[in-house]
Length: 399
Ligand SMILES: *Cc1c(COP(=O)(O)O)cnc(C)c1O
Image (cartoon, rainbow, N blue to C red; front, side, top):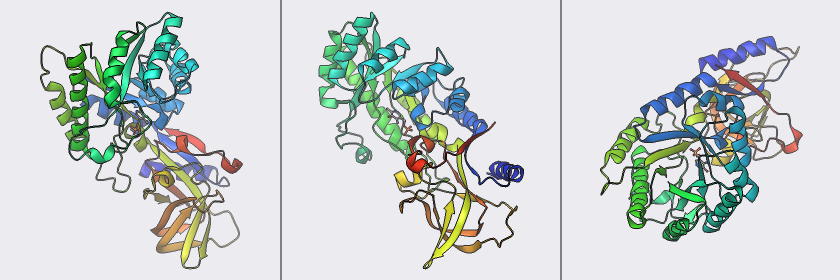
C-alpha cells in the first residue's frame, strides 16, 4: 500500500487546494493478478473476465492480452469490448435479452450466447434464422440438486436465472429442432463471493457431472461447461483469501477424470469479475470534516456510498487505511482525533451513507485521505453516482 500513499501524497503536494477524491487503478497489479491466475490453470480450462465488475476501458485493454476473453451481460458491454478488440472472444449472458441485443450480439460475433429460458431459445433460433446465421449457445442451468454436501446453502433458493434443471432435457430436445442454434454445452453461475476453495471445486465437479450425464442421455457435442464466476475476496480477513492453489489442484483432478465411453472432457470456462479486478482498485477520499456527536466521532469524506457502494451493499467491514497529508492551507487550527473509534461517512445526505463504523484509528485529521483497497470490482460500477448531482471522482491509473 506504500506506493498508493506516496502517489496520493505527491499529488496532494502538487494540488494542495483540491480535496482529493479518486478511484486509483493499479494496472500493474491487475496484470500480475490475471497472469498469475491464467498461468496456474490446468490445460482444458479457460479464463474470461466478467466486465460488469468493472468495465473501465484501460482495465479491459490491460486484460486483453492475458485472459481468454470477456463475459458480458448486455449489448453495451459487448460494444465496449468490441471498441477495444474486433476479435476477442466474448460470451454473452443475462436473464432478459431484447431482440435487438440478441441480433447485435450475433452481428458482433460473440462466441457463445447463454440462453436463459426456453422461450429465449426459440427466439434466438428465430433471430439467427432471419440473419442467416447460426448461434453457438450454452443453456444456462438453474440447479436444483441434489448438490454436493456443504454447498447447499449457496443455491436451492428459486431465482430468475437460467432454465430450471428439471426442464433442461426438454430444452436439449428443442435444440435438436432449431437449425440456427448449435448446443455447445451448459452455463452454471450459482453463487457469489465464494471463499471456500474445496467447496467451489466440489461444485464445479458437480457441474461437469451433470453436463456429462445429459450428454450421455441425449448425445450431442458437449464442448463447454461454463462454471461461471463467483470466486470471492475475504474483505474482512484479507489474509484468509480463497485458496486458489488448492482450487486449481482439485480442478486438475476433475479434468483428468476419465469420462465414461469415448467422450472427451469438455473445456471448463470461468468468468470471474471480482477475483480478477478487486485487488487493483483503491477508492480514496479526503476528510472534509471531523465532529463529535454525543459519544461518537464522525469523519465526513469527500465521497461516499454514491461512489463506492460496496461496503453498504454487502454490509461488510471494508478494510481501509489513512494517508497522512501534512500540508494545511488554513490559518485555523486543524482538528484531529487520536487512538479512538471513528465512523467514516460520506456526503450523501442519507443516514445510510456510512463506509466504516466505529473503527479505531491511531490518528485522523481533517485533510488526511482515507483509502479503501480492494475497490477494483463492484466499486464505481454498482454505485448510484449521479445521486444528488454530487461530483464524480477522478480516475487515476498506475502502471
Ligand atoms: C456477475 C456474473 C459473473 C461474475 O461474477 P463474480 O462474482 O464477479 O466473479 C459471472 N457470470 C455471470 C453470469 C454473472 O452474472
